[in-house]
Image (cartoon, rainbow, N blue to C red; front, side, top):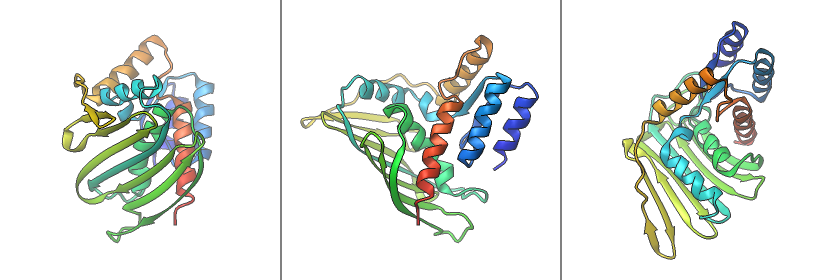
Length: 235
């Protein structure tokens, strides 16, 4: 909840900004941030760390080259055993990861409709469990399950295309990607590189060479728009 004020103060002070997710907590604030970035001309980057994950980069190549065909359905599960925050619930804490991945793999897409629920299973003032089904503007259907009150960490995404499917899992620091077609599974060998390190190196390069970051303010705005669209339709 502090992000918006800190972003505005930093930009106004002539600082380049790398902000953690979620960028901000409303579309209104996100649009104000975009205007501030345009006005100041500073480098602004959102720390959507998964997009600097080499397995996700490989998956992007598979999607955008047509290897998987047209993506039809996506299942995303992001569960972890706390901590349960006091300022935002699990949807705004973990959800940015998933919607950043969707934006990265599918291109700019918007939420057409969504339905689901949020629960306070741990008795906290914010939700610690969310389940939703989302229809995107390109026709993709997404099933999303988020929990900050799970017994163990589980982060798994299944992408089903009309040619092939892919599974990306990174639970307990074990990264796994599998591409399947016709009963045959392929597990590509991908050189490991810490996503956080990749992210920070990208930000430094953008500052030094005056480049627009891959996860810039426009990307951040799209993610916040989709988050707000879904959250507003949860019971």
